[in-house]
Length: 358
Ligand code: 5GP
Ligand code: MN
Image (cartoon, rainbow, N blue to C red):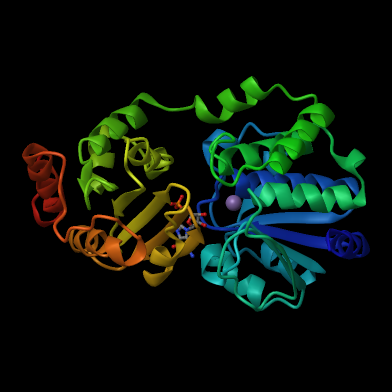
């Protein structure tokens, strides 16, 4: 199967690569590796994304190949001229953002390379496996089907970062012996230094981001016999700490670090509604829950966007927990950590109805 795809890539000349909105390390690492590999074969490659790469990925060799889709004539021509469009790390048109409609309606052969559940069916071909740790792992397989010696230091760095970020630094339940074999191969071929790569990605927090984390942690609440944890982020917290929404990356995991918690959620208030991030442990899967809200993702890491205000979304989604989790003890009423936390959360939930305090 990767052989067939590798041959198709070798036979084509012009490529467009794209990925989901607000791309993460797996998305941009997979794109960079694929773009460098195809360039090495002498192909014409354009990488067109709806959003820029996170600044924690900008140092990656090859990151300069990533461009933001602005609908310019040049970019539309690249899409129109493409023989193959590779859609990496997502499987749905709407997740592509602005670039989505142009990709779907193009005359190119569209290929999905992805590991998410619930794929759409409009792609001309797919290389997907839900059990894969990351799209980076799948890109590794595709390149190796051509020849593992194609993996140079830059490609190895990009794939290492893709796999590292999607596995929570090799500790999530998607980590298998095979993932470690792939990673060992990348370290050897690229002569990589794992500690340096890890620091490049994760030791990039700003003081503002840390202050935001402290505000968000104060909203922590627990419910359903303390098995479900949730926190909220409001535009006001961003404003008052001087931080950007990008800084909330990874915050949701803090809830899971509490003993006994099986599901952690982060609710982010926006003008158009509320973004919900789900994380869970092992067999307590959350993707169906996210799907029921119109979103999707992986069994243990999913998300959805609910077009409702923050407080209504929190209340409704938290109340749904027993339906999607086989909770041994399920209570209807959320059971916050303390009265003080409850008061704090209630205050936060009412923020959008109040005049901002100057
Ligand atoms: P995050 O919570 O980090 O935004 O997303 C976690 C996972 O859920 C990601 O793998 C992402 O693909 C998926 N996801 C997040 N938001 C959405 C959404 O609105 N729709 C779908 N289908 N998947 C989402
Ligand atoms: Mn991924």
